[in-house]
Length: 458
Image (cartoon, rainbow, N blue to C red; front, side, top):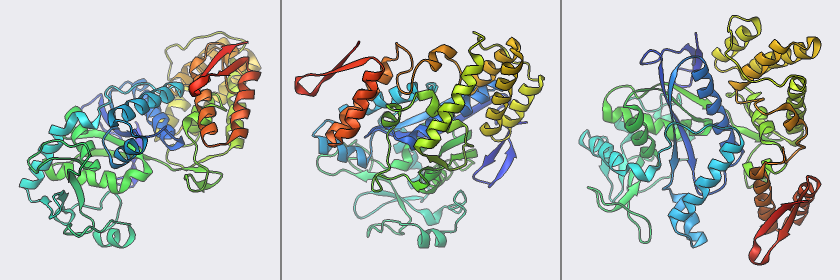
């Protein structure tokens, strides 16, 4: 029986799908105004692991991961770049997809964009207004009236008084209560806007996910996931909107992955320890990064450091070394086999990947000890449910630290992009390091007029 930790109830529960054999899951995706960072990578990899395992366990899974393509940050960045908003978001959606593919993340079944669901957002706001849960403020915004929703604070476990005292809530004079949040923003000069019953404007952030999830998965579905930072206020506000509009439960199980820290400090740009996925992939094989994320439990803090990545590379090398003597492919798993049973027990216990990875190492030891081809097949097959060990062992072992295999053009492009970012930041030592690493891997860079960089193999 699958058990998972439900943030809403703060305990581990037996999972019971709404429709037997089927699971509908929604995960809050990226706001596309910049390159994905390590925190985004964890969300991508963790919920890719979750959906892979649910499917391996026999469930029919519908997985939705949204894209926020209208937001204050997007508007601000487009203005700073003197770039059309659509061009900005298209560029970073492509970059996100490249990063996800490099990390072995499968495409979700649906990847809705917020701007495609404006009518559905307006309909939910209209219903909330009709029930007295939304009001038009004096500044023209439509706000949600938090005090009129009795269950507010259940997900975060705080009363309204606790939230007012402990959270940094922007106080806007037009709001009835500081905790009230915007559903529809009135249009400002030069900003994108859509017609609505409340005049020209655009949606608030929180209403986007309520609209997209209900449109694609229904008004009541199984699992909602995202990073721990979204628990309050974003997910709390989603519950208020959706249950306020529909008068029944929104989501049965809430899953949140833990924070990412860098050398035991919170990752932030102000501390100078902020890393994009591209910067990390310029130095480490993408499967090493995926393995680093998965060998920690998804709810635990993830501490990034060069040493931890180096340790992950060495550990993954041990697993691939065990497969070197057997060129095998994944096969259907006999879940009664002792190693497979342990693996399944671990994964069914709130996706306990550290214990599941320990089973992989036990199998690797058996392969090394007995040269068992059956053990190698099982190692390959169990690892496949985590999206690991699917390359030929020789490809990984001969690939080096950055460019894994002669055909890995994506990683070369990522390294070149990271070098260009370093040059723009006048971090010439880092730019030279990337160039040397590529040169050592047999890749020659040629900087052309206009800032374009081309590459060729030696």
